[in-house]
Length: 134
Image (cartoon, rainbow, N blue to C red; front, side, top):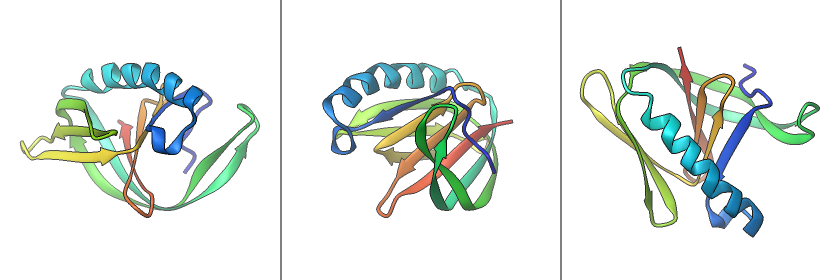
């Protein structure tokens, strides 16, 4: 499963970033928020990454992560997508096609602009949910 293109932006909170990264993150969060809120009635495949490893990306010259083990959680149609700040975290929320509201408290979000994939990092130990636009 190769999931990242070279056109990805990230929001991360201050606990996991330096000052420069935090300032850039604020701008990225605005872009991520606009993108997420525009996903009304869009269909996504959901994946839970169970294990991943760092990999050097020769295109961007950065270390990224690559899933080693994942499970597909299913498909969903997003409605009422929202992002809001909560205690130095972001609360990502949405309703599915059955009107069940879901929310995830996250400390980092990646948006792959080219592939329309959203990566939501949460929990301890780190876990990732991928929203893959279908």
